[in-house]
Length: 119
Image 1 (tube, rainbow, N blue to C red):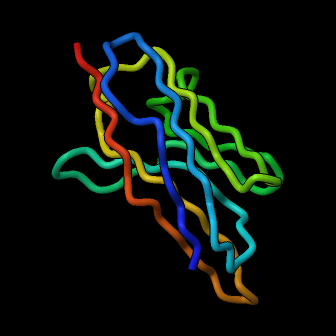
Image 2: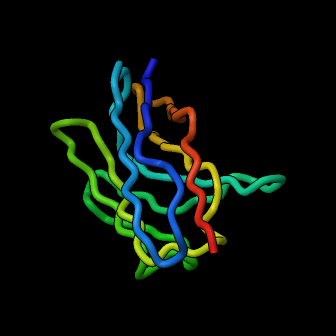
């Protein structure tokens, strides 16, 4: 069972920066995509940024130019640098990983970390 442990959430003023990190352990499948989703209160969980095994990235339109995702395959970690934060970025951020075990797609989620941006 893959475990994803997030760190780095917290409270920051609008315009500030935060960095989130996620470490994967207990790897039982080949991770291809890894990244971050977020969930606003009462809303569905939405993709923020994903980085694939080939290094390609995908960002939500609302964070393009402000957030940067990176991964360290040797350490099984993924990071999200968040700059110029806005109050609407306030949410619980979840680490996400997906890949294959044989021919079966596997998905893992972290427990979530709160990011609060004050105006």
